[in-house]
Length: 114
Figure 1 (cartoon, rainbow, N blue to C red):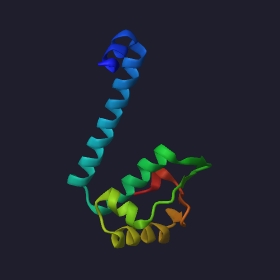
Figure 2 (figure 1 turned 90 degrees about the vertical axis):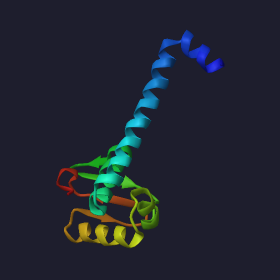
Figure 3 (figure 1 turned 120 degrees about the vertical axis):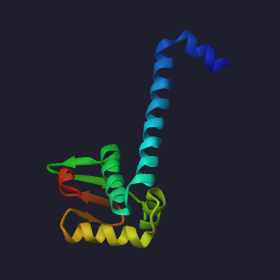
């Protein structure tokens, strides 16, 4: 009951709480859409793009994502197997679209990542 009263009294707090809930719902809808309608490769690439937008640091045309996620973690987040993640990340690396190690993923050009 206290939060409801606080939100009623403070319009700015109300707006921020609703905005946070809205953003979380949009993020959840996007994840569900990817899991239901997209293939494994697309889900992994979209995960990289979303993570770059959220945590990435631009360095010229490149985007560096600091991460400690293992291939198994990425597989869990994308609804794929760790073997599939490894295969797709290595394929992207061979095409010089990304580079990665245990601490970071470097996306060469975010617009070209497909």
